[in-house]
Amino acid sequence: MEDELFKALADPTRRLILDELTDRDGQSLFEICTRLITRHGLALSRQAVSQHLAVLEAADLVRTRRDGRYKFHDLNTEPLEHIARRWLDHPEDTP
Amino acid sequence: MEDELFKALADPTRRLILDELTDRDGQSLFEICTRLITRHGLALSRQAVSQHLAVLEAADLVRTRRDGRYKFHDLNTEPLEHIARRWLDHPEDTP
DNA sequence: TTGATAGGCAAGCCGTCACTTGCCTAACAT
DNA sequence: ATGTTAGGCAAGTGACGGCTTGCCTATCAA
Image (cartoon, rainbow over all chains, first blue to last red; front, side, top):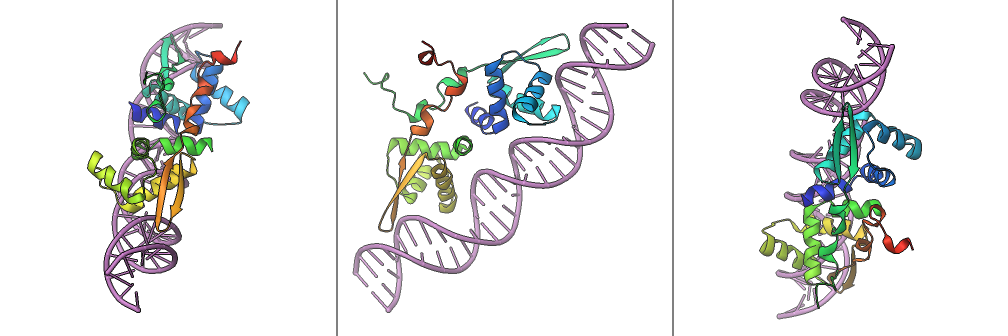
């Protein structure tokens, strides 16, 4: 799980996808593809983006819901919140 | 720089090295090798660890200082502090 | 000086990863 | 029913990453 989280964040395209979902939640695969092209000049195939989304979903950074033939992708920031905590001082833990 | 930071964190062995440096700062290459074996059962070659340390240093997560034939490795947590900030709500930024 | 210790450099191996291509299913519109 | 749109599955390719091996330099002690 932790492994999948860090692996998911290791790829710059996946970080861009997280950016786009931060900007607007609940996008479909095609919307994400379009935004990667228009806003970042990244002309990836649909499958490439789909595979990235699968990696992000495996890391629980993205959650999906289906509606008919659409699949919407929602950002889940919870895994990100304590990502670096183990290496940082936690003054709140040491009273 | 950001790319190197996330790539550095993507490897579980490197995260263990950060753990060991969190536990005790300023270790030499051989000390880190020894701790990886004794505390985690990780029998890596010296060069493998050395290459990991180079990646961590490129990400500015580790800083080094030489003293004679010894090279000491110090943890630098600064890059970790705002690692996930771009995807999280920053209530302190929005008054 | 000799030997031992701490570390560096470079080439090579092998597995994983990002991406493409081709084909397939499901849902909706006409 | 047919065509179109949204998405999925699977195999293949090329590159990168982690690790090893072999050899080399530098520092210190005897």
